[in-house]
Image (cartoon, rainbow, N blue to C red; front, side, top):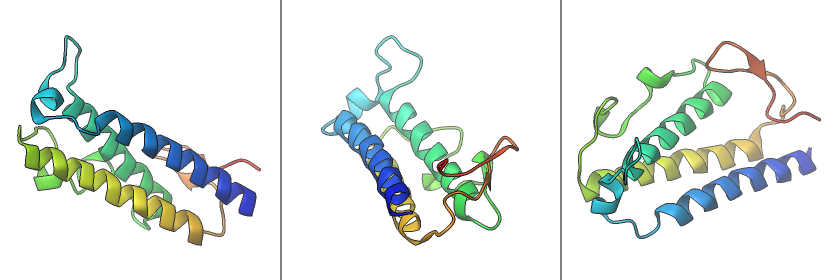
Length: 128
């Protein structure tokens, strides 16, 4: 179990490190510019943070919350606020859920037990 926890922690930490490295120092103007793409940095951050919360909920909450039931910062599911404060709220939300993942990983004893996924299938955290 310790090696599974260590591997799970390493995966979470690397994903976290990559996201933080990519948004560190981003201004609100940069965060709002899609630079010829389909989504802005802020939109991508909101998407990643939202799915982070949904997957956490399905892994640990007795009554999992889907995309529309997630606690979106400022209650904004389908839109954003183009402010530095809102950008920071999204970063803080991502960090809060990331910390919940780390805490849960340390306390859960059944990493091999299949859990419900948001599309109706089940899967364990890790396969042995």
